[in-house]
Image 1 (cartoon, rainbow, N blue to C red):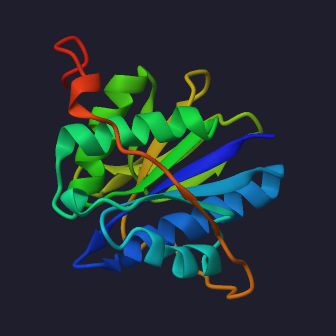
Image 2: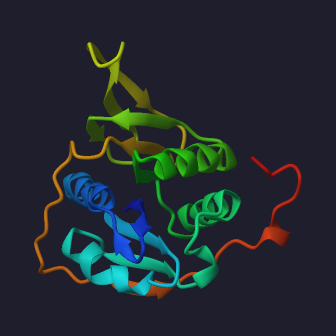
Length: 192
């Protein structure tokens, strides 16, 4: 059984709607294959994300409750997401396709040496983590399908406001404290 990891983005302590859309999409994909959904939240309000993340489909929340991460730090965010992907044994990683999400996704993808589908408007996932996504091309005049067949974990950024944020309210996410990546753990070869 695999896992889908979702990066949760917040602004001033409030989860962004696009992150809840990503969690709901992960839940839909995980239900089709019997996998779990793990969310990662960074910053001083990380644990407060559990209720909303659970209601939208997360089984577990990896909470990095560190106020130094309230402001975006690209290297630490990417390194922490990469560590979380390994620690949760995720075969798929989803992020909202916001400016921050696209930046973290590209940096994390490079760290994990894997494939990334960008700006996806439709997504399919096979058991084991193979992803297939539809994305706009030619300024949105056409669509192209792309796939990450073999690289694991497969990654995708989801275009905001395309996927529904579905709240069941019944699910509760288990909160697990998670340590952020330390700058001293990164060497010159790892810098992206």
